[in-house]
Length: 203
Image 1 (cartoon, rainbow, N blue to C red):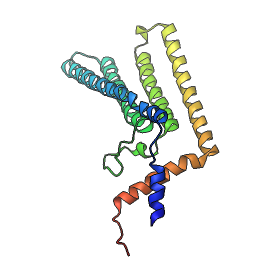
Image 2 (image 1 turned 90 degrees about the horizontal axis):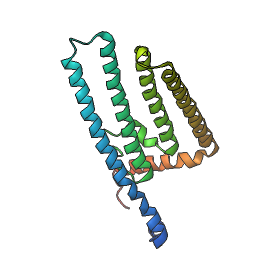
Image 3 (image 1 turned 120 degrees about the vertical axis):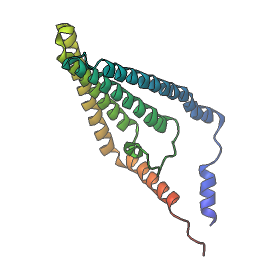
Image 4 (image 1 turned 180 degrees about the vertical axis):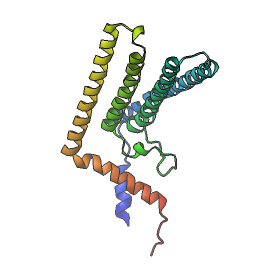
């Protein structure tokens, strides 16, 4: 019965001053994520402003302009989703655990998030946002020069190539060191199971 206590004490031994300061420096990122929450609120205001503009001017706008406004709303939503992934996933990965295991509203992707998965998801979000901008350009090509359209296509292709490279690197890393990525997930599941099951009575 004394072995678990000694192991626990060994794991929770106090850190030396320099490693402790370095480890605590991760909290310097907290204001950055709080600032992104403020940016999220600004995008909510922008979304409501665009919706109000669409409703009030719906009788005077033609189909093309309505489509452009709707694509602008979708663009705002995708950027908002990108912010949520950066705020929640970044905080969980680089700062501290959120402690939402077992919560009914826990995001599906949060239980297996790591730096590699987060990069791939952010790349896919950027591709979606770039696709919306490219679609808006193709709907109204007269408002943009050929040079602008060409560079938008090049940037979109660059996003696609970058996402493919990131996904390939993440896949190769996962297959090269599978235990490094499987053990945290197993420990996470075991911890959730222990927290949800009642303790057995001692003999």
